[in-house]
Image (cartoon, rainbow, N blue to C red):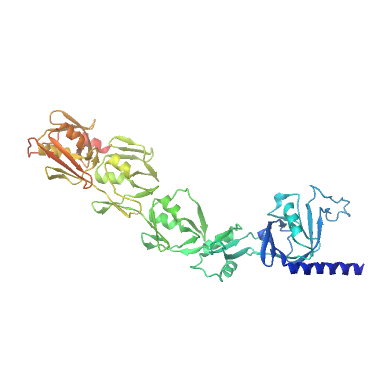
Length: 499
């Protein structure tokens, strides 16, 4: 019996020597749930596996394959003492279609009748594989093939496709406290990283092990209108993550949601593009650092505190304060979410928080205001056209309407010596001999469209110069220099302004 054991061991060693000559080796990283077959140091195959449970962990160390069995019979632990029958080969066999015995007594690499268990820590310590995988592996290795078990939850290296450094973090399945910041930093220390590691973001990766390659989080400075904010962001590959709370404070509003947020080091972060979109801010990169800014609205070269909001590449403006500044009759009911301009409801507005915003197109349509802006501009100047009569200016702060700039009707009527009255209930001006003109009140003054005015007064010629934002009127009839008083039923203009 002794010599038989010696002979068997000698055969194993001889076969093992042959395999070593072939240079094949099985390497199993338990947290990775992967069995890798190498040949002369090159990866030949990689298979998903199941490993031992927390209460029956797979052993670590080095051993060899001691035997190979095709369609093995499964013997339950202490089956004979318990009076149990062995399970023959077949679909109910827990070890599947192949058994590769190991030098660790009672341990092996085998198939399974429970393929859903692959990728989990569920076995009694053996390595489970899909039957098709273990059949292929059995044909690729021989008795004596070295098998190495190790436990590593943090892997770092260079991405073979991009050459960029990466980190992969696997779950600490046996709770050995291997996913620590100090271990991760130690493993990253040999890489020549172009920048300082963001430890909060790295800690977040360690706390959420995905088993997937991830770029190394590197610190990025974040700016608000050219000035650095206190909290740094970080870069993950092509994505720049920025601290959200400082941006909320700077912007004076909070993003209601709609984009992914990540917590790192006690701070919430979001992708820079998502944060800019949610807060309606402009975004530019200055030497790789994100710079957020709010578009400034200038009226008469004064920055109006009305907020702007960039939405889908278009500029929107909070209209309530702007309308008040320019004397445009506008009412905004925050509770009912109802916006009314010139006694006409406006439906197509943007709601941000409890404020109503209109796009540049909507401002032109509903308020007669023009804001020349294109994406990337940091400021926008409100353009108010000029109106001239026979070369003399009537107003330098008009509004836009059908056919060009609106005409201040009372001033024009005074220059032409025409009587004027105003029906505030119907929004109709009566000019001269019963000429009815629809008008609007702007800053306490009555304005009408030049097209309607030219139709009512054939002696008045209209020339709209869009590029210069100038409207030139030419009067060929008789005129008077006296300006008649505006005749109107009491309170009607004020009633319009309040509506």
